[in-house]
Image (cartoon, rainbow, N blue to C red; front, top):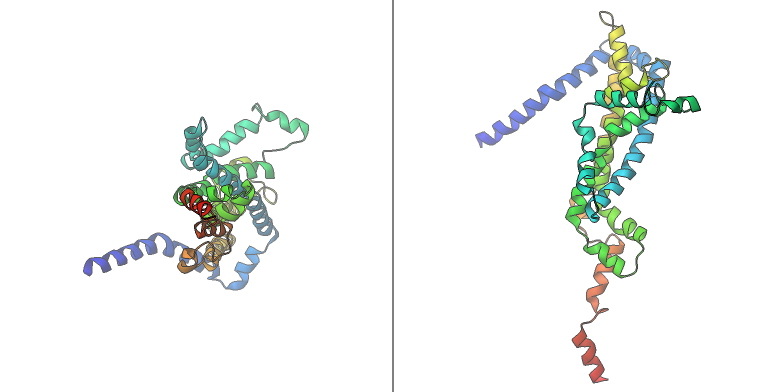
Length: 302
């Protein structure tokens, strides 16, 4: 009993020291002079532009990485092809590389003297603009949906998908009615992780953006610029922007918790949910497909 409480208090103390105290200090420093200074700092034009730019980049990167993650997860689990192991390893590359290295690689690729530097001569501007920042964000947040979907696909197997195909379902129908409902919560958690990484990305974006105030400055970059410019004065702007980032993260996680089904609904048979798989599985044992002996026996009786 004592060991159990010691373990609990130890875990709570560890989280308090590393997470709750720093975040609580940021909230305290934000509102220590009242609500009005914090609101003014969070709603000035430069902060609003940084927030909208951050949300635009996330709105582009998250759907693309979600679709790519689902397709790649199905390809890795359901199919065998040459180079599958290498592709599986490459997916984890953004997790191993430092974001600064990612930004530097994009800079060398699209910058002066790079392999794709000629794009700027044709009016396609990548560096120091929205496309370059979006590419950097997509790269660093790419693996999360894949790594959430792959274990679930391996766990559910292929029995229901094969049953649907046997009954004549098209591939897209099988995916929409069977595969997607089975992996939807894995996709959801992957989306949460991808969104958090896209909104909070700093290293790669800071290199390819040029950090132009009012043009290519995302909210994390705005936090640092405000903190650096207000050293020894009042960093309310940096703290207010940090609180906005924290609130976005909290709302994303809270939304997932609110819409998460109960354990009873997850355990409910697919037929009770109205799913195609439930119909496929439940109709077959009901006598629609009889054995050879039963068929021959009925013919003899006739």
